Length: 373
Image (cartoon, rainbow, N blue to C red; front, side, top):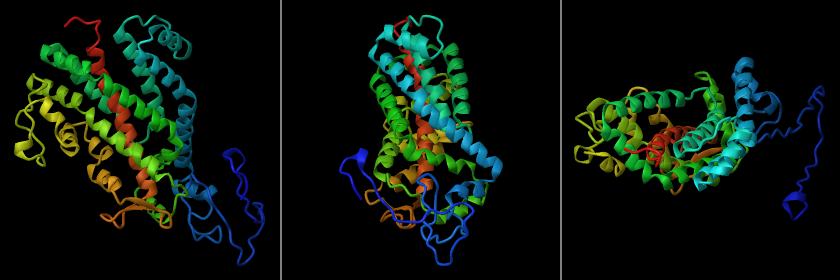
């Protein structure tokens, strides 16, 4: 080992490099490490599953599925490296209220051929650019984002046409969501900046039933648990703060008032804690908020994307990454979960947060000073 600075630090390993056509010598130890592929610690040949990283994913997924995974992964990496810096610049000018620079960036990098001169127009352009990037980073396999946003949009538009209370609620709450909007963007930016640390969570969405069992015995050669758990926890909390527009739209469509929850409540929510209005909903625990959203047809995915039980396991004070077994364990959960499963949970939170950012957009548009309500 040599070098004291990152740019000149080197780790030297004395070994023999084998060509692909070379035969294995009996008793030869083979080192097979790829930080992006789950591998087998005790591999001493190319025979067991996980001992040959170049082939592990191909063998587990099959040729066609592997190519689909590779295509989505490559697109996600490219979006994070090339598209997101432009989105970040645009959104920062939007948050700063610098309309001149916002328009310049929108026209130069996002094909906007007109002048977004009003506040709500700039909000729409900024969120469209953000959504274009986060959609690619999330991937298309196993995602429910389009379904959630589509159903919310239809409910929201229908509610605005039917009663003024709905629009007033979104306007009032949108005006008080300036800090939340900034926090959501800041956290999404952190996710993308550290995308390499959790991007393999995408792999879990490509397994056929039963094919994932092989990976439970393999280890992902990464140790960024503290960093990625921090992203997971902050993203989870922020996502739960953005659930209210979904509930408000559902209440307005069914009962004509965003604050009216009626008599239909999730069974798990105790009677004394059932909210009477949106302000009471805000004070519920995350688990109960998620339950209200997940009981609406089309939004059930939030029960999985924001799984409160797994969040408690990951966020437990004693939770840590056992480097020998490759599992996330704690005093509360001795068996824990594989690191790959953990990364799948992180991707789920990113999907939930990026989806709910587009939902929150409705309240920010409604709160625009361009409208006289």
